[in-house]
Amino acid sequence: MQEVRIGFVGAGGNARGHMARLADVEGASIVAICDIFEDAARAAADEHGATAYTDHHAMLDEVEMDALYVSVPPFAHTDAEILAAEAGLHLFIEKPVVLDMDKGLQILEAIENAGVLSSVGYQLRLLDTSNRIRAWLADRQVAMISSHRWGGLPGTPWWRVMDQSGGQLHEQTTHQLDLVRYMMGAEVVEVYARYDRLTMDDVEGITIPDSQAALMTFDNGAIMTITTSPMMTQGGGKSDINFLLRDQIVGWSPSQVTVTGLAAPELEGEPAETPNIDEVFVEAVRAGDQELIPCSYEDGLRTCDVTLAANESAASGRPVKPRMAP
Ligand SMILES: NC(=O)c1ccc[n+]([C@@H]2O[C@H](COP(=O)([O-])OP(=O)(O)OC[C@H]3O[C@@H](n4cnc5c(N)ncnc54)[C@H](O)[C@@H]3O)[C@@H](O)[C@H]2O)c1
Image (cartoon, rainbow, N blue to C red; front, side):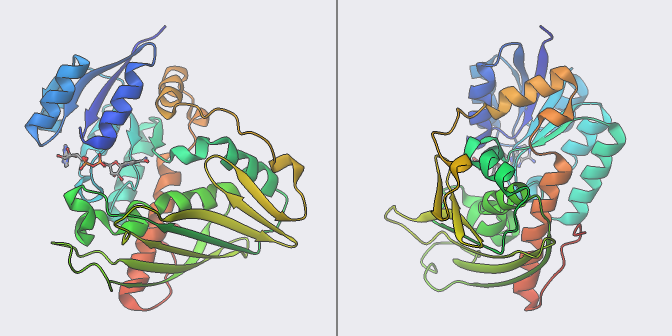
């Protein structure tokens, strides 16, 4: 079996999850790990028998590898993806892929010019519930979608800073938007958003809104409302996606599909097991087959484009057409 040698830029909580899963993937080896926080790089490298770096330029110059994971906060994407693509490395990049669309388009160009494989960490696309709804919706007209993500504030310090995370809709609720794009096979052509912060001024250093609502129009005519908030401190919350069709409401969750109204037997039943996204990536690299990967960089950048357009709309008070919209 061909060995797949992997490097990391970023060794925080999410990267450590990928590393742990990769450790169980036959033929995958983590060879180098870079984090600007030296202790984080060293601890992860010691655990995985890799070489630690604090500068990705040095790592990319010195270490032979086949693929690079980039798992840094949204504001911290600089030139790692571009240099890696130019060196022929396949890329796994965490969502949201950038905070600045100019940078995202530059990275996309580098990936396309190099012809390397790309994968974005929208792992909910691999769920059976997502794929059942996607197949079922293929020849049906959705009229409206409503989605909510109401939860708590993640502990990572950059998350509460608008210029670093882009806010919850961009950073976290990007998963719900991405799934709607994926399940419906449609693109957002206009976004109108309103944001506010009414309850969370007690949180030190917070500059993100605590209330975000966006109205989106898709190119198949469907309209969506999406709301998100990190204001819950005592647990609880809500995370859902509901599609409204004539006589049917179809609700997505990771573990089940609910149908209200007319029955839809194709959507019923226990979901199949979810593939490991890291194993899927390693297999795609080995096979040289982009089709095995559920979300390419181009596709992930489209999701990112929509939430950045929402941020622009909330700031300007006007509807915005995403830059990559058809
Ligand atoms: N797919 C998912 O479900 C999922 C889940 C969690 C996080 N994520 C994403 O993963 C990314 C990282 O999140 P996290 O929770 O691991 O954050 P984190 O703060 O725990 O880790 C980020 C790490 O990146 C490092 N870093 C920052 N700039 C760097 C640079 N230029 N070079 C090297 N290292 C750098 C930091 O020192 C830190 O160790 C975010 O984009 C987040 O949205 C995805």
